[in-house]
Length: 150
Image 1 (tube, helix red, strand yellow):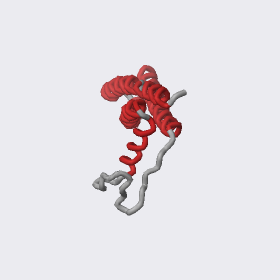
Image 2 (cartoon, rainbow, N blue to C red):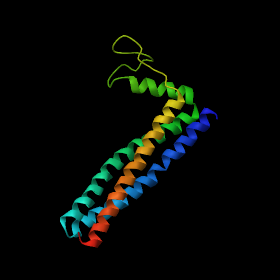
Image 3 (cartoon, rainbow, N blue to C red):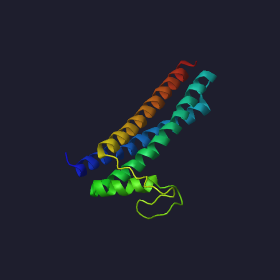
Image 4 (spheres, helix red, strand yellow):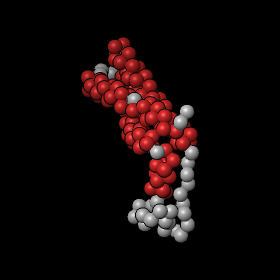
């Protein structure tokens, strides 16, 4: 598979993170309302736990969204764009902008292979899915406890 197709496919998967984030936001609203109207304390604690998983999912959603936009840029020219991205990310804030310039006197640019970038981005996307799954599981448990009036 060519590098530009690989980048495009990865960006497509990462773009689905928006749908996951929207589902998480809806679950957080339900959990928040449930915390307000829930009866016994046990149900409130479980719904509160679901609400806390929302923050974790939001963190991953932001990171996945950033990666998705970077992979769309990488799809245009994976090799050159990858080098520029690595150079930008390896430069400390406020450091000189000359190519391969380092405030420490040596070049710190490390070219990462596209496969490594893809694996890292997909791992982050799977973590977002796991956070949403945990959020929905605790939300379901909280609703069951509320219905059972426990």
